[in-house]
Image (cartoon, rainbow over all chains, first blue to last red; front, side, top):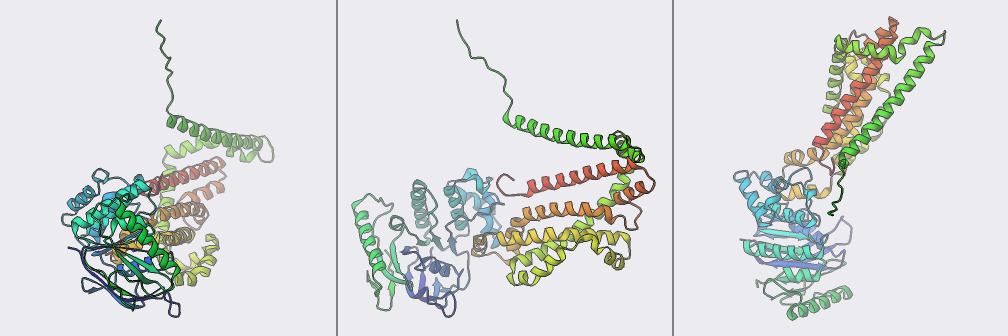
Length: 270
Length: 270
């Protein structure tokens, strides 16, 4: 269950002669691990995630998921976006079934859809239209849609940023729990330091101009995590400090664990 | 003494709203009828225009009823409706695929932009000589004129609708493994259906206007022919009745399309 991700010297330019947005980004994520990526706006976090999903082709380097080179999007490595992006002309059930239909997994489709809706707590809303649901419920449906195709990796691009604080916190815990239960590898891009610490086994801090890995922090706290705990607060302070360092310093990668001079950093299993 | 609050029967708000709408519609119709009646009265009492007294509602309304109950209206309307149907069908068959291509490809949009706008501005009736030369039957020529009137609204609304599809929907589809055909069937066509129908509604309006003068062309059936015939035999009551009935049929066709837009529309409140 879950898949490992190898990112090898990933570089991206928006056009041939532009300054790279991301340069020589290397990282390894073990199967079933969760990694959060934080960094300033414009440091290339979302671009990195799009390259992991195969939605954007890198200018250099490569991404491998379970030793398969990522050349195009694939349901096994599935992305959840900032907006739930549910198709408004389809019902909730039909939205959840989309990936199964696209990949020809129509046998047992209804049962699988019902199972996924049950998992995200929306078993009763299958016939509803997306616009009849709250923002949090829509994001749950998007999660069910992603989970329906049994992904090895889920890539989350600030999926909770438009939600209210209570719904956001609940969803952070639910997604983490579901990913752990199913052994799914999670990669999360966020601006919210608490979100990163609640959901991730490791937090990567990115610097900008160009986007590089500056620091990597192990979050060795038991799940579910409580932001009021002293250990959580200590990690938050540590992460804040590293984040500020990455903003103010345009220096080489700050090591946390096994960072190398070339900007690569290996993430070990927790 | 036991005092109970007096309950008064209240009218439900939706019923009140419907009654108000109906009231305004009836008021508008009454005003129209008054103007028509006044015009008829003035024409009938002016010696130089007395010959046109048949235009007054007192003569035209009984004539309209006669046309309906004797089946004369149906005999005239059916060929017209057939021509409208085929004209709109051909317009949709051409405009929807071309509109999708123009919406998808910015290069094609640039190539066709000027030419399409130029052709759109040509009055459909200006194509009459071309239609007569190009088609071996009068029916073919009339359907071509309706086609020329109807094709542009559908084409432009389709192209615009394709451009407006949220790009994140395409990312979701790619992410879930959609083939190009699945993309078209599950994403593009449902997303643009309300706009295609809105374009079709506009086209119907223009086509219905073009129909009557187009049916002056050689044919011996249809509402346009019936009006021309009524004028030739100086049956002004019949002419006014036909004008009224053309309006009623046009309104009914428009109402059918509005109902279709409501049925297939997925926007909130549709």
